[in-house]
Length: 447
Ligand SMILES: [Zn+2]
Image 1: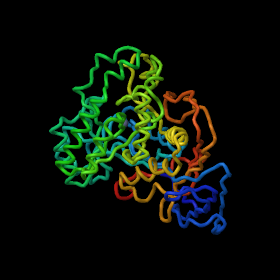
Image 2: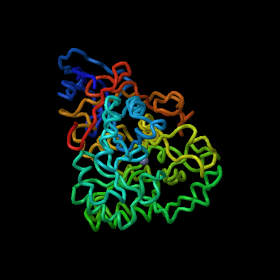
Image 3: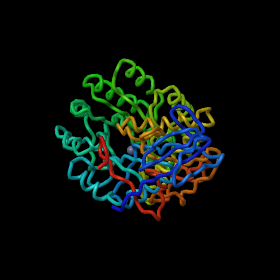
Image 4: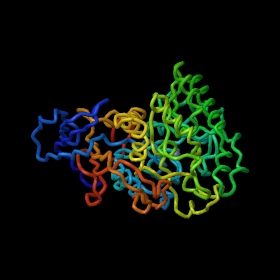
């Protein structure tokens, strides 16, 4: 990999998100880390001083713990170069790659090595890896854990790809007991397949697709997760919560000490089922985008702290796989690693939330979730991953202009507020011409 320059500079801005406040400040970067945060008028000496515009805010780089890169094996869907370019363009400086949709899936140490080799030298932001928990590797998760994955992903129903089978409820309980013993995090796609009725999803109507995947399927699976976490003490994290009715279950479990956390995604906070046109399969994802009232309840759960983090579930595929207007045929998944920040900010500001909230949901929260203690906030000693963000600038999304591999986007044509103007990785602006400078991360430190 090319030498990794480490920026020495000062970035000065009248609005910097520091802790739970927005303040005028100078952020001094030395050797790729934040060396000091001083008052706006106390500018440390440095070879370069960058002063942000009055319309710009300095944010920490986002940490997106839910990205499907798909390389190797389905690189035509997405690859490390395109996914991480898109991430940087969206203000995301660290991604964690999901263990499925690549071939091989990341369910053995050998497969992790294959994936790391594929990623090496291609990444424009830092990349860590989740392992997968599948029936065939139960009892031997410790080897992947020791190889540095950030935790394990499992499904409780068909994952959509045959090489990544789901766990039965009893297998899930033993897997959670195993990860509890390792001190590892288990992240769960929580839908109960027995409550999903595929006969309803044929055809182009969104209502049919929505009816096929009812809220009860999420609630049943989450109940299973909660009882297993209660019984084993294993840390569980529910990925991509769509059903706001499950929030009270999670809150109650948490208040009684069950080690569980939960994420939702920008698309559940942005779109609503009532507005999805027939045949708009770019909106298909699982669990589904639900009604507007559900979306508002998700926002309330974020504001109350019942939902911990917002991450993209960037899940791209080829344009051909999204071409069918039939919800029973088109691939499910929404590619949005580049748009998470403006999408969430657009929704947040209209509901009276602040950039401090957004940073908690999308940077410091996800970093804490996976134990990345050196990033996710602007503080002395942190990696100098920073974003120049114009919170009042508006733009209209053009799928063709996005940097992930295939020009398909649920957001195409949508006006959003909040423009990412520059992204620094370890104090150096991410730029195509400088090549990929991202590092491959292992749990507990970089490699
Ligand atoms: Zn996913």
